[in-house]
Each structure stands twice: as C-alpha cells, then as structure tokens.
Image (cartoon, rainbow, N blue to C red; front, side, top):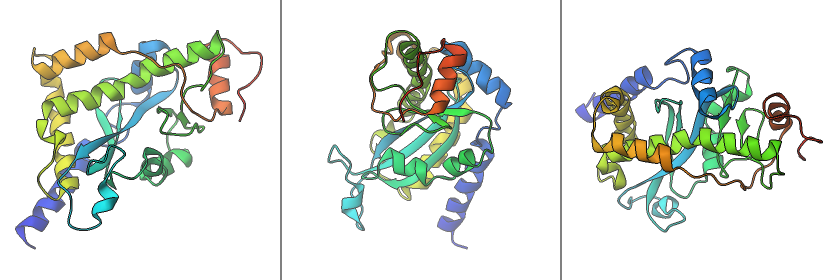
Length: 247
C-alpha cells in the first residue's frame, strides 16, 4: 500500500473513533443539555450544512459551484449542546442541496429506522419529519411562537459550532489540499480534541463562541412542512394549540 493510501485509511479510522453519533455521551445527558437551553424536548442533535471553499477541481468542475458561484464542498455537521461534533458528511459537491445530503446519509437511515430515541433540529434547508424538526413557517401567537423560539435558540448551537470550527482552522475558509474530504474529517477530529482546552482559555475562538451565544437572533418564519410530531411537542411542552399544524 502506498503512503497516500495509508494516510487516507488512517484518517477514516481516526474519524470513526472520535466522531460517533450520538454515543460520545449517554443519550439522556444529550437531551438534558439541549433541554436546558430553551426547554425543547428530546433533542439529540442539531444539523446544518456549511460550504468549505476549494480550488476548482479538474473533473466535474460545474458540480462544485454553489449558489454563490464559489467552488466548494457542502459539509453536513451534526453536534450536541456542548459543541461536540457527532456526525459529519463531507463528500458532496457544493451544488448539492442540504436536504439531499441528509436524505441520502447513513444518519438519516438510522433515524428513520428508529435506532435512536430522539430528534434532530434543522433549518429551512430541511423538510419537517418525525425525526427532524423544523420551525412553523407562519407561527400563530402563543404556543407556535413559543415552539419556534425554543427551536431557534436550541438549533443555534450548530451555527455556533460551525463558527468555532472555522475560527480554529482558518484553512477551512479556502481548502487548497487534497483529498479534501479526508482533510476536512481530520480537522473535525482535531476540533473534538482541542475543544475542552478552548473552553478553558481566552483564545479568539472561545471569545467568538461567547459573542455568538449572546447575540444570536431568531427568525420566526421559515419554510417547513409541519408534522404531527411538532404538534405533539407543542401539546406536551408549549401548551396545546386549538388544532394540529397542517400537513
């Protein structure tokens, strides 16, 4: 085996040791940490996509051009309330939509099969599903607005995590090395290792985290298809609305 092949294999092995959904801590503990943020129940992860700019590839170049006309890899990240990254998909070109990445991911299959007792929270890039909650598109005053506020405050953790990751590793603002996927995975492993140190220090990434936590704003209107699960959560946690959300 050549040295390059050994390096690629090693990066995959290292990644699977450190980034495992959601078994880095007990599921109950993950839910409790999320619930303490804004009272949203049963959350085991927040999910979002982020674009890592790359040099234009020689093959299938057009596939990597994202909506901002930049060549990139669209990376799907899932994290917990403590900013620990628990799942990463880093193989899709920038033109691919967040929803397709999730729909075809192993994580989606495992959730739909009922392997995990809990929910993911996502933004407007995802449709609402029993195991993937998005916010009400036009919330009525009262329980639906409470639901959206709690959803937004809780889901902000993944945005903070992505901001911290990119602040720690400036190369992620424009990746110039290959193979890109394995480099991205290794940066996530390093982030997992150094995060406890950052939280105990006064380094720039930690200051960024504090600023994001205090200044994050919520949008109460997002395009989403509501499900009976969101109605059940409102009934249990945010007082029962007069009627369930429309499918």
